[in-house]
Amino acid sequence: MTTPSVRGAAGRRGHRPPPRQVEVVGVERLTPRLTAVHFSGAGLVGFPTPAPTAHIKVFLPDENGTLALPQLGPDGLVMPAGKRPTMRTYTPRRYDAATNTLEVQFVLHGEGPASTWAQRAAVGDQVAIAGPGGRFSLDETVPHWWIGADESAVPAVATLLEALPDTATAEVHLEVAGAQDELPLPARAGTTITWHHRRVADAWGAELATAARSATPPAGTQVWVACESGAVRQLRSYFLTERQWPRAALTSRGYWRLGAADHPDHDYGED
Image 1 (tube, helix red, strand yellow):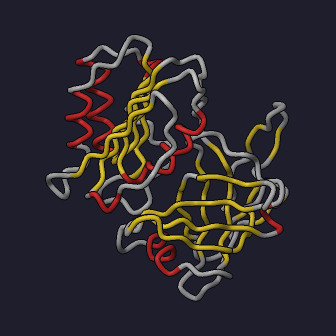
Image 2: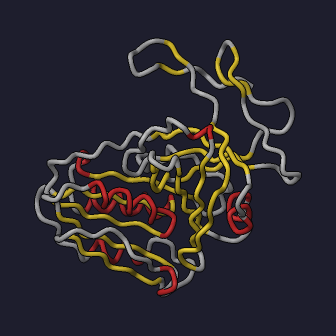
């Protein structure tokens, strides 16, 4: 199977570069269900500084520990023969060019290739990383932000808060299972962060919906929401239909979908 080639930044016909093979150099448990894995290695040299809320693909080893990766051929990337590599989409939390270290935060949600791998990750383990990518572009002229997310998007929210200019204010609502899932986040003056604990364990997005309905964001506010796919669509519909929010002032992302093993990274909730 061949990956289609893509246009380069200068408009010339180019190919996606092969994934970068990296090594685990540190593991840090941030909360009972969130772990930070730090990667480094020669393959990471020259990694682009990720834009806020960007995404990467993490290629995971198979059950035998083999890391099968696509290779660059004359017509683009070619997947290895046989079993397709297992890969999942994550936010690059931060890249430090001085130490050539990339941090990726994994939600430990039970069974699943990435969750299981992250639960057992140890120094010396090998994975590969492709990207970063993503179509979000930060508008630094926006005076105020209303941000809503669940635990899957907490790393992305952190990158967004770090990137906001000092002139911007932000109202942040984060829906998680309980107090044990809370952690410190970047918060400049003018930023408020409210953690919402689910009153019903599997009521994904219910607390965010309540927060949205009680919100009174000022004119010119940019709304950014990211959570379970179905909940994202409900929030998007509420803002656009009931609140008559301008489409250009609403960014929505379905980071995962209930019952889906590998949700695509291009779910913008616009259907």
